[in-house]
Length: 426
Image (cartoon, rainbow, N blue to C red):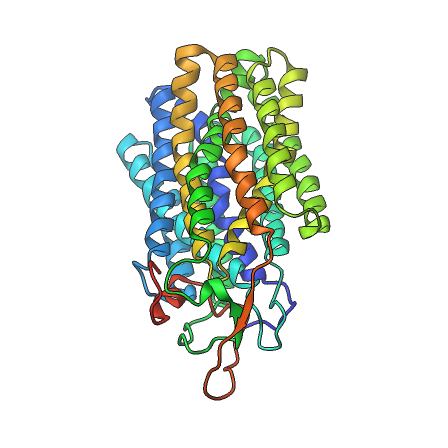
C-alpha cells in the first residue's frame, strides 16, 4: 500500500479519530452534567460507558472475533463513531445520549484497534530484511494530531454556546473527515505463508510471543489508565469548583496543556528509541503521579494550571513509549491491541472512579490515592520494559520458493493473526 519508510498517514488519521473521545472526556462529562438532567456521578458513568464500549471493541478484534479486512473495519468503526456521537449530539434525551455514546465508543475502539495493529506491523521485517517503518514515529504523529485537534476544541467550544452537543459533534465530524483516508488501507489480508524468511524465534510457536511480559503489561495498564482518566474526567470540575476558574479559563488551561503535550511528543519522536522504554515509562509515570497530586490539590489558578499543564506535557510522552513497548512484543499487533484494550478498561473506569472518590473524600485525597496507585504500577511496567530490551535469538525458517512480497500494512488487522496456521487468540 505504501513504500517502506513512507509515512502511514491513514493509520495516523485513524489513530487520531479513535483517541479523540478520551482526550475530550473532561468537556464531554462536564457538559453532560450541566446540559442534561443528570448528576455529576451519572455524567461520569456515561463517560465510563463510552470508554468501556471502546475497550470491548478492542478485545473482540484482538481475539479474532472479526475477520474483516483493515479497510472494512476502519470504515465500520468510523461510521459507528459518526452515527453514535452525532446522534447523541442531536438529542437531549438521556437514554438516547447514552445509547449514542455506547455506539460511538464501539466505533472509536474499532478505529483504535485497526490503527494499533497497523502501527505495530510497521516494525515487522520487510522483504529486504529491515523494518518496513517506524512504529514509534507513527504513534507520536498520531498523538500530535489528537493533541492539536483536542486543543482546538477546548479553545473554541466554550465560545460557541452551552450544551453537550458541541464536543460530541466534534468527534463525529472528525470520523467523517477521516473516512476517505480509510480507503487507502488494505482491502484484503494476504495469506499466512507470505512471511519473511527471518523472524524472531518467539514468533515461531503457536502462542503469543513474550507471554509473561505481555500479560504483566496488560494487567498494569488498567490501573495506569484509570489513574490518568480519574483526574482527567474531573479536571473541569476541579478548575471550576476548587480553583474558581471560568469555563473559558479552564478550556484555555487545557489547550495550553495539550500544546505542551505537543512539544513533549515532538521531543519523544525526535529521541525515538534512543532512551529505550524503561526510563521514559518508569520516570515518566513517577512524574505523572506528582502532577496528579498537585492538580487535584490546587486551590487557585496558578497551581491548577501548573499541575494540568505539566501532566498533559508528560502523559502523551509516556503513552507513546507504552504503545511502542506493546508493539515491540508482537509485530503482528496482537499485544498492541490487547494492551490498548486493557488500558481502555482503566480509561472507562476513570470518570466514575474520579467522580466517586472526589464526592466521598474530596479532590486532594483523590489525587493522593491516584498518585500512590501510579507509583505501584510503575514497577511492573518498568520491569517489562527492561525485559523487552534484552536481545532475542534469531533463527532462519526455510520455506519453499521465494518469500512473497509484503507491504507495510499486511498485518494491519485482526485477520492476519487468525489466518496463520497454529496461531492462537488472533
